[in-house]
Amino acid sequence: MRADRMISALLLMQARGRVTAKELAAELEISVATARRDLEALSMAGIPVYPQQGRGGGWSLIGGARTDLSGLTAQESQALFAMLGAAEGASSEISSAVRKLLRALPGPFRDDAAAAAAAVRVERAGWGESSAEEPPHVQTMRQAIVDRVNVGMAYTDSAGRRSERTISPLGLVNKGDRWYLVGVRPGEEPRTFRMDRVASVTVTDEPAEWPTDFDLDAHWRRFAERIEARRSLVRATVRLPSRYLWVLRDHFGAYLEVREEYGDVVEISVAAHTARSIAEQLAGWGATIDVLEPAEVRAELAQIGTELAEAYRG
Image (cartoon, rainbow, N blue to C red; front, side, top):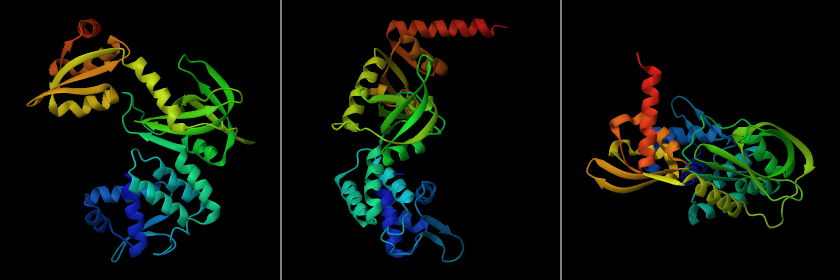
């Protein structure tokens, strides 16, 4: 859910004591279904809100209408501020609200909540990849970042090589549906790891060694620029019905650009690291789309078609 809606929902519950999905929808000018999903997302994330069925029911903050967030446990406050801190492109108003909410927390929780808010970054546009669910060790790694302790990690790289290492985890980035960890070993530069390749995590009692000048946002920008430069070596121009644009945007993420719109038809540019990779993502569309250029992508599509015809002939 959006961070601004989350803050509004929490403050509304604090002010009124109890709020229904219908009331929240009216206040935030969203659908009742969206309001209900937002409230459920808060509860599933570990924020102390709960529903009450029946007449006079609704959603409430555990601890009473005017809990001023002092009823939060340490883990609940970290869960809340991790969600707030991860909001992509948060406005100045959201940032101000986060600061005010931090000040409302009990003193012992404040530092850890701030650390949780800084531990995660979110970018909605992916790299044309998707993962069915969150990798199993994301929450454990986030807690290790908040606690500033080292972790032992079994990791399999892109070449299939498995290794075990102890690192200081510095931050997590959720890009599209893919999770990435930024970590460092003593005497080395920070590195970026894919969380879906992490086989196991063992949390230690060793204090993490953070580089004094480390900036998660700056590190991620440099890493993303390198990846995007490698992934966009080949670009193709494609025409398709406008109603299917959202599907291809989901496939290609940041590597799709809209060039022209002709009524119900849209012309787009898509990119990947090879012509074959583009063709593989477009082949299933058959004649629904028209690849205008380059010739290499058209040739790869023809080759894929020939391979399928041969494989399934008769």
